[in-house]
Image (cartoon, rainbow, N blue to C red; front, side, top):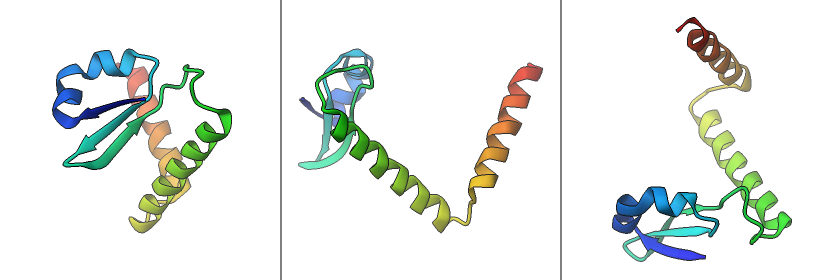
Length: 87
């Protein structure tokens, strides 16, 4: 796992995100984010599953707090897809 600061992420984002190593992003000695490449074999399947479930739960909480339903999200995706086809 690679540990980088915000400045290094900003300066080398493309290189870091193309790599196969997980990246832990720090801001003022606190974890600001984690990048886990989907095609890497370094992480156990269980860890990947837990990370994805955790992210899904945070997104669900955020949308619920804003009063957005699953149907609203799906309708928005469909409208966006139709708009792209027209271009």
